[in-house]
Length: 400
Image 1 (cartoon, rainbow, N blue to C red):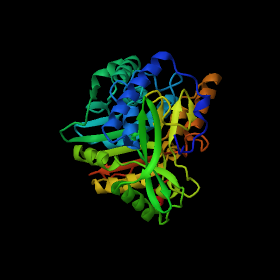
Image 2 (image 1 turned 90 degrees about the vertical axis):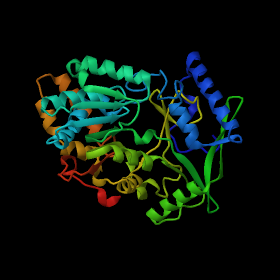
Image 3 (image 1 turned 180 degrees about the horizontal axis):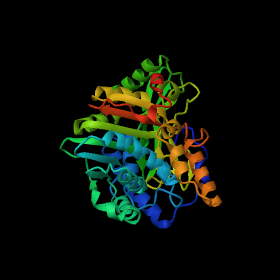
Image 4 (image 1 turned 45 degrees about the vertical axis):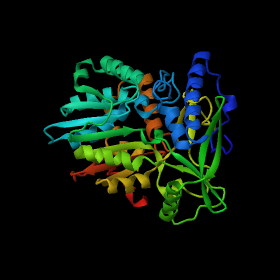
């Protein structure tokens, strides 16, 4: 990549993929090259990222690779400890109470462990939804989710329905999106002598390159809107990114949700912090076998590509879509508000080894140096104005 974003290490130190994985990546490169040839040689970075992550059968999230957990490329909070899903379930249960035909919809349920743990906790609290919907595009992940729920909560499997797209009829309940926004394709931009340039990708003979070119009107308008919000003109050489799809995504959810809550959990910042002058190389990250690195063009389809979430943009888009922004806080404060300490106490035993493991899990979920502050939780509500317990400890909406 000609203009690398800030990452933790070079792709040169990554483990070499196997021959079969390389063949899959090469097949995806061929598709990317075909797309480039249909677009005068270059495609927007967001289009490349969409293909790298979601091309049917070959993209990172739609292929057969194991992505989550110790054997994958990264570990998400639900895999750290069941306490995470149990805390989420407590907030979800509050919203479901009083709804006669409530449903839960989880976007991209990963390994399925959060769905299984939440179903068990909701059952314990006697607030099981009529259905637990999972919107998942990957056939291999659907299968893994089915196996996880069958193993952990077999008697609740008939509550789960897998979807290929949003339901068309209105429904009441809760929409969950844990680490979904960070996996949406972004546009990368650079300020060059006061003008906005956008990153584009080129592919010849299966070899990928990228280059900044003058941005179109849509991308330039989005960057100028960012500058207006943070009340700062971004300096020359400044590189970052933005999510061009979040507004339409929230619109589609609002059209579907008649009453209830959307709970978003992801790593990110408010705009002023996201686009701070010291963060001048953006936030985009690539993950392969628990290593973060700098090159999104490295073997497309074999690695995760993500960027942090601009929660200010999410909040503005949510209001435009008809939601109320009802809470915004750190993951640590949300888990405290939903009773992680109480849940911990309920699991105290004389097993010293088990207690050490449990304490380490809580530290991972809540410590500022781990997931506690880097991850944020945002609640969007519609036709629902009851207090949300996850935000009683701290509410950061004023920083948006």
